Each structure stands twice: as C-alpha cells, then as structure tokens.
Image 1: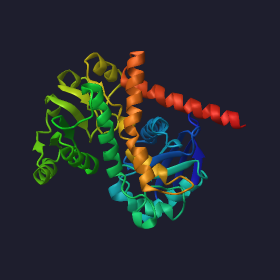
Image 2: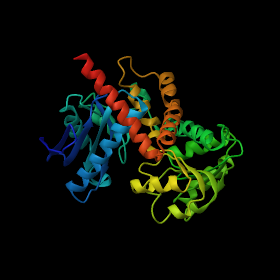
Image 3: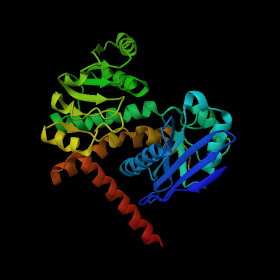
Length: 355
C-alpha cells in the first residue's frame, strides 16, 4: 500500500492511502487530538475527484472535533473517506486494505460506521486493526448507534421545550419529523409515547405511511413540509434544509433534528435568530451515536448504563449552549462553537499542566 501525507494547515495529519490490488483509494483526516484520539466514521462515496473527497473529509473531521468536545467524549475529531461507488467496489480485500491503512496511524484515528458503510464492512476492517468501534453486539461492541442518536435528540428536545415554554413536557406539543429512517423513525415512536403530536414525512412516502399506520402518526407531504406550522421541526434526513429558499417560509418555533449540516451556510443561523426561531445546533443534539461508540474506547470497556447517562447529558449540553447564546446575544450555532472551543482549550491547559 502507498501511504502519503497531504499537508493541510490546521489539521494534525491528513493522509492518502492507495492499494492497487484491492482498488482502495482513501483519505484519513485527523483534525485535533487535544482531548484524545480522533474518533470519526468511515464513509464511501463516488466522489468526482480526490479534491472533492479532501474537502469533505476535512469538513467532517473538524465537525467531529467540535461534536466530541461539546459531548465530552474524551476524544478528538477525525474522519475517513473511501473514494468509489459502494455498489461496485466493495469487497473484503478493499476493507482489509482499509484496516491496514487505519492501523498505520497507530491509534491516532479510531474509525466507526458512516454513510454507505455497515457493521459487516467494519467487521472486515477489524481483521486488520483494533482501532474500530460500533461493531455488532455479538462481537462485544455496542451495535447499531441509531437508537442512541434518537434518544439523544429527544433529550435535547426537552431543553428546547424548556427554552420555548418553560417546561419539558411533550404532551400536546407538535413535532414534524422529516425523514423516518433508523433514527427519525425511532424518534417518532419515542415522541408519540411521550404524548407529542407527531407528524412525519419522507421522500419515500410508503416508509412514512407504514410507520404512521403502525403507531398512529400523521403523515404530511414531503414536498413543502417546512411550511407546516409546528412547535418543533426535526430534519432527520438530508442536510442544508435551512437555506435561502426555505428560511422565509418556516413556520416552526424551533428546529431540532438529527440531520447533519442543517444550515446551508453559517449566516442562516443568524437569520433564524433574527426571525425568533430557536435552533438546536445539529452536532450538539445528534451526538448520541458517537457518544455511545466512544464509551467502547474507555479502558473499562463498554457499559450501556454509563453510555445512556452520557447520551442523556445532551440535554445539559444544549442548556449550556442556550445559556451562552442568551448571555452573549449570539446565534446558538456560534454559542455551540464557543462551548466546543472552551472545552478544547481546557483540555489543552490540562495537558500542558501535566508536562
């Protein structure tokens, strides 16, 4: 395998791995390890070029640094991407090569599941490196992260309700979930059980209707769903849903979902504040999955009860974000970055004090 470093200012390490025998062409970005080894998922996409893949892996790695810092996982931020069509190029040999690539960093980067990568793929990666999390329960790992992500978002919504209404009761409150896959679907059920009026939509209308029929939910059309008047709008599928075309049509009191990169651009967060719409920053509220797999990295090993307690602390993290936003009169996404940077700096000082 040919492994070469790509110099990128502001990142601890960015490396390229090419294995011609298996067809692997991958990048790993380690953004910051101040708080611990860099944890972040592995994704596989048919990027048009290495430049496009590099842009993606850098953005995602930096996001993981901030997500882990706010969630206090004791880990840093990294990401890996495999360049190629997952339908055509997936093979055991490719994932074995990827495992060797991950292992070459000696634990600086720990990988996990992400877009187009499943547990069975990670099991193959695991044959070549121990630096893998989120494997099957049967292998002694924590399994599917989706239920933990869903639980964390619901806990975060409690903080949103308190900010909006002065209490965290779901009864009688309306929530619109766009995208009812593994996480959005689990959220819908949890919210229904808590007495919320749950509306669902999905680009796959049948999936939304099947879920609604099973749990007594209301289905709304996916097209134009953002125009529906609702207490909490929860984007749980595609990102960039808050953009120039939609922001003026929003009729929600708050936005709190599990999708990544909900804001198309930073300025849309400021516009939400101007319009009086409360935004729960995505990387704060959707951290349940990464919190859960991070527990595997503890010396004591995985403990589900401990993990659930850490996931539930997303409520406290969002409360702190909202406190900073109000105290400094800044948008909540800026407040979340402030909190992340504060915790990273605290970690840096602790490290310096131990030297």
